[in-house]
Amino acid sequence: MSFYKKSDMDTDVIRLTNDSANDDIFYQNPSFFSPDDQKFLFRSQRGDGNYRLYVLDLISGDITLLRKDTSFGWIPTWSKDSKEVYVGHIGKIIVIDIENLREKIIDIPSDSWITFLDLSPSGDQLVFVEEDSRSWVDHHKILSVINVDGSGYRQVYILDHVNEFYLDHPFFIEENIVLFLT
Image 1 (cartoon, rainbow, N blue to C red):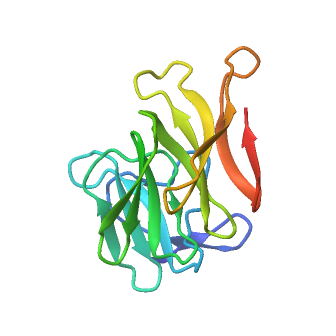
Image 2: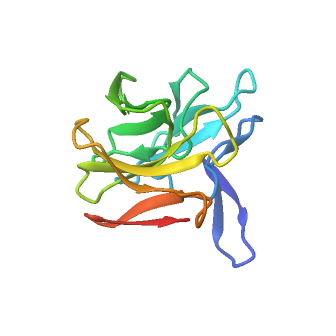
């Protein structure tokens, strides 16, 4: 990380990465700082040109590849203690310990792509979008929640594709209140 330039508003712009690959944030959601503000989650096309998930330590500047697999759900989220990252996949949420890169699995009882994850303020529950894993047409279909221990899965909103055509960006605004877009 280094000073990059002054912005048009005379604020410092800090460059977080300097790799020639396409390092970027996730679509329409720029806030991937860990809750303790020590790390930043991003995706990059480093190496073979495929997007993979990385974490930048904002203190040391070290960058760690979290998963070699190029499949990760759109918009992962941090654990409340900043020690784990929740990543969507087909039919599961992968929980990655960022210190040792060990993975745990939270199984979801469907074959949906799990995307747009958000953690509740208590850190006990995840909300996410289930997308059709076989098609990109009308692919957002269900808003669901699950406890981080894998219990309590429920579908809380099912898109009818008559009145609503898209389901996007859910996030907790209070412990049991979720805001989302249709």
